[in-house]
Structures are given as structure tokens and as C-alpha cells.
Length: 219
Image (cartoon, rainbow, N blue to C red):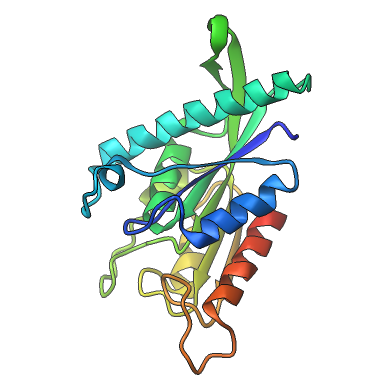
């Protein structure tokens, strides 16, 4: 097992059981990487409308705390020595957008989380995984990416070529605002859910498989 954990959050209408998130978690786990998936409070309570940004960000912070402690605990159980837990944060659409806010707020520097018996666990958010990142609502032109100037982690964007929430041109333009390195991958036939049309060469499942492969190599 590696001293790394990946935390994934779903899109606004999805859950932690979203197939592509489950598939990515299985693939990374097979390579010794711990993965934590979670749902936001509104989803758990059966509501359709997302919580406020404040609540969503607090939930992400709780997930970060939980994931770092869980990874440290598993490493200790296996008697694996480590100096720091490296964390990748991200997810689909809304989940990824809030993860980007967390990354910009926490920063690239190492921080400490208090573990069992008041032990200090050193950790760092070193990368971000953004799937179908929503730069704007469909039909709108103002990009919600000003906080990108405060993101120093390396970032991966994977989106469909027909995504109305962000075009390839917009994604590449916004990625240039990042302080860390970035990779932008466009799956030509996919929409925001990475679903394809009946006439397309690739199926929805094949696009999801491509995303999993790309994200696994990035991590």
C-alpha cells in the first residue's frame, strides 16, 4: 500500500456510486492506492438541490480529514513507514469544482491533521482530478475560474467534446491560470455525462474506461 489517498466526490445529480467513480476507485485500489468516495449532505437527506458552497466545502474538509486518518491507520496496521500522506482531490462536475476550491484554499504546502492519541499526521494535497469540470452554466459565457490563480497543485481535466458546461477552448484557457502543471484531455464524443450518441463510434462505457485509464496514469 502506498502513502497516497485519492478522494472523489460526485456531480450534483450523482452519488458516490456513480459508475466511473467506482471503476476508477477499483482500478486505483488494485495498484495499492487508497480511494475514498463520499456523498454530500443534500444527497444523503434525499434532496435534489445542492447544499450551499459553504456546506459543500465543509463536507470536503471532513472528507480530507477522514481520508488522511484512514490512510495513516492502514499504513500503520501494515507496519509501513511513511513521512507524509499525499492526497489527490477531485471528482465529477460539482464534486470537482468544490475540490478545486479546497485545493486553492489549503494550498500546496504540507499540513498536519491530528490523529489518534493526539498524534500529528503530515499530509499534502499534491494533485487534482477534474472530470466534466463545470466552468459555467450551459448558455452562459462568464467563467468561474478566478480561484485557479491560487491552485498550485498539478491538475488533470477530462471532459467530453460536447460538454455545454465547458468547451475544450475554455478548459485550455482556464488551465493556463493554474500555478501548477495541467493536463487537459478531451473525449470527443462525450457530453457532460460522457454519454455518446447512437451514431458515435464509441460507447458511454468505452469513454468511461478511457477516463479511468487516463486518471490512473495521472495519479
